[in-house]
Length: 334
Image 1 (tube, helix red, strand yellow):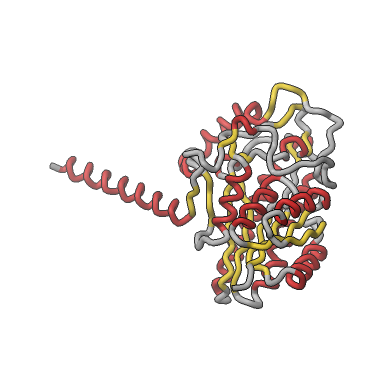
Image 2 (cartoon, rainbow, N blue to C red):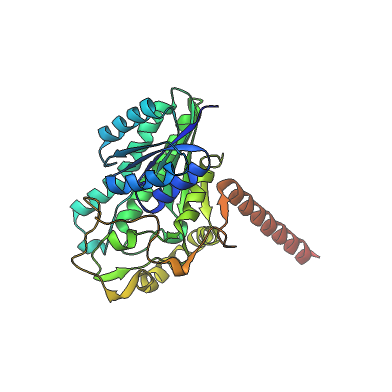
């Protein structure tokens, strides 16, 4: 059986780096795409130690032509692309009133259009064979709508809508290409130190924090699932219910607590480099600075919920509610 090929963007650090290891353990050879060639080479050396074939391609995912050329090179040098995981992203954090149009545009180009470019490149090659999996990252419902995060929320919302339109098109054309969204909670990656930060305070993760290996496991499962999405932990399902039943209350709580939930008391280093327009220097790997509070893969709360299971849970809850209502009405008539 020929080796399966996985392409990972943003593979030099953070979630992408952890995903490369996870998919490598699952039997894939890995194409590593990203802006920082040194970090990509470090990741490739890790994989090569486990006899995993790799291909390092420095590329800015916002450049559609460069991403397509990378896909052509991967097919020629590694083999047919089976899985494409879009893990690259960049953003700017701050109130909308102080954001510049240039920064928002760049964040959108990397996070949204970068994932779209990867999806288009993957589709062009996968459709020749009629099968494959494309994995895109989304925010967990508990992180959607946070203040100070308009740039990333806008990009992820656009990507979500893009994928929702793409799926029925693939069904219409009878392609067995799966498009899976991985809904991520806060992940302990280096991004909190290199994100463009206009708040004046150091950034910290919101809510439950998970190690990047947990996100990588979700991405690995997405490569094989038939579900539309995979989420992590209990907060995703609970937040989904809250967003539906009490949007006004949620917004009021976000306004009151959303700022301090994201900001440390200490001031940010105003001279620190960020990764919005070019890769931040440094020998970063998968983990960030929050190892002490992050949940590991073996944590009881590091479980994975597919969209199919979540739909079943909602259906069971609705059925139980209707049954209780009917029983109450019948008892009231006696």
